[in-house]
Image (cartoon, rainbow, N blue to C red; front, top):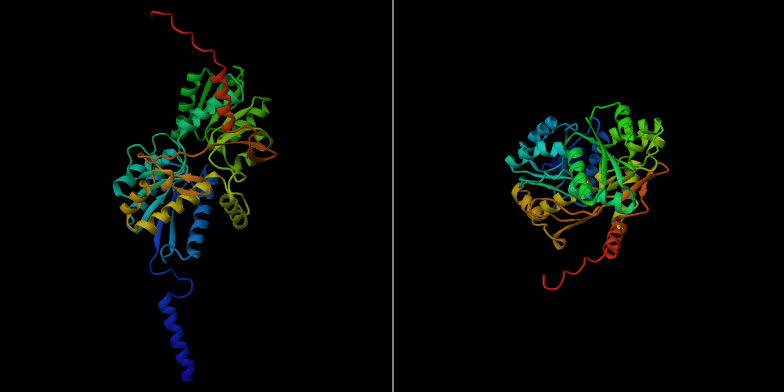
Length: 402
């Protein structure tokens, strides 16, 4: 009996020492994750959540951060700026939250920016592309390109690679849709790409037939959708139901498996610019895609890859600089050159003084119900522009004596 009692006593001591089975470790490093986990953008939010959980589990399986487990706190912003401000307040006011990954929507990042900056907590967005997201926010960063880069690229691609001269624009009347549309329109004017019609919509719009009728009357060569996948799917479906055969192109807001699910065959041939494709990348990227598919049964999208990298950046900052909000922010801000950047599954990330970063851009197309690389890429655009420069007639020499 005494041996049994002694064994039970020792076992009890072990359970006390390690917190018992199924209990959290006494000390953890807490990182906030916020995005549209419900609502129209839930597909994006789900990708953010899955990628963050997968990366956190990998970090913890490897021993945590300096031996301390990483824990995530999720806050749903529902893709709504008011909800985003509330989520930011909850995360920022918790002194245990070392940094925040989010938000996805630009309007939500802008709504949360003031909160994060006033509370001194790092905000790292894996999805907000509006030009103004990082401006005036010393604590706000993103590991995705800006809309002015993407919008200008789309305009150039339409004119110089696709060879079209007339374009119509559908844009979501929010920070993302307007920002992408504005940069596109500015570049279109510079290069002589004619915008024959513009139509704005709000997120809860369901019927696009009247606007499509107005657009088709102008006979555009291509239609540009500056918005997210849910509205994009409805626009595509209603356009094809009207018999419209005009090609469509969109920004990274259309990059979602739900675009294909919701629009079906109407999505075939749609061209989309994006920062990541599962089928493009080096061994590190391929391993990430394989692990993600094994764990969740679906391929990761760009936002999953960027979230995965964002958590990796924060984890590295905590490991190197310690669990201090300002030290974490300063460490990330010091990633200001390729040599100091973070080499992730979505490419190299480093930041300028505003917290913005440069990322390569990939052109995808929906083919047989999947996003695959388009036959023409950024290199083809550069070659086309160079060919134009070479073939341009030389300016006449000024007359002598002038």
